[in-house]
Image (tube, rainbow over all chains, first blue to last red; front, side, top):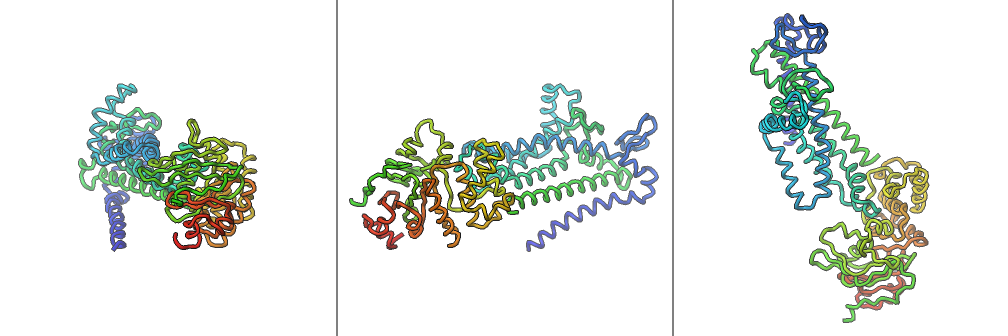
Length: 299
Length: 263
């Protein structure tokens, strides 16, 4: 029974992948596609007419249409990494505080409150980021562009913190009390117990939370669609400019294109690539976690 | 009424720890009642008694491990070298550095053998690698484990056998130079051979340390201890030299327990 369920899940994932890929792969032979788009231009910079240097451009409705996926992946990675930079320390910090330090009364309020955050529809969070956060951030940090990677990342962090928090908190709670007692009996102070015993022992679980949070972040669509500004700019290190992510592009454009159009095919290619990135990162994360666990349990 | 007042043998003159009118409560539940007990320096004191008699609770009061339980409250005076460890301004962390503890279930950290023993030194602020390495070796030798682990100091402590893990916990405890070592049924989860090694170790450690051991095994108490205290229902019934306790106990309850009539 369980095997059937598990196989169904695996089959569903495989089928999703196949059906997305099926819409994308005809680009390799379809005349309509190859006449309009050069496959090389999807990934490499090109000096288009009217430009004085090779550039990465995503301009699906330009003439000619320019489908370069680099700006979109740069956008996705920028927002995701920035959101992770904010939510990993925050999520783990909250988890440690709630699991190890907070008095019962505080724990019983904070824990459900953070977990409730995970239940807020992302469109609501996106709305909040778009209307409230963006204005506040611009007033505080003086951003030139009101909607930018930082605002989107903060919005995104609101959805990832609960994911990391919940899993990290469980991992910390499940560190055996005997280890804590052993450390205390050796004259460890509370912070030493937390940092040198509990945190390392909970690391595999915490890492699992981070991997899951990363997957959520890179796949999140609504918040980045609403709060990132959606300008496909290749600017690696300036986080105050607008960005356009892979997910937001698919969501915004797929409804507007004709089925089978080159644009349509490229959007499905984006989907396949996003799927692949998430898949690979998950596997890498899992392997890392397994190694950590092995190291912790026996040699 | 003869059972209510503990028959404490004349207080040893070289008491390392003295407890006076110690009461321990869990919430409104009294686990330890008015215990007066002297623990002689550089000797082994065994605490025996049926399950739930409070001997472990009493043991955990001796290094303030009960502090970690919110609802637990300790009353009375517990003196270490004449100073009350529950006194004002006494840092429980300092108490625990002087009064170490070995637990019933071996609980090595999921770290290497070396890092386990070095843990107490490092958290105590010792940074000198040579000092740490030397102390780790001394401690492992002290716990009769060095020869078995000297080639695998960097491998995980969780790969050791149960008995080795427990001796590792003893080594880890020795590394911070404790004066008193509390042992809570240290061999109860071990096979007879590993138990024999632990007992041999306890007899060796007696030369340098004051040891208090809680045990369920009367034979173990008889084999390793110099004096034995019998607890029953949270009270100290009798405390005397081990030999006297096992041959001519003063109290009827003690005799009944030792001869296996209950417990």
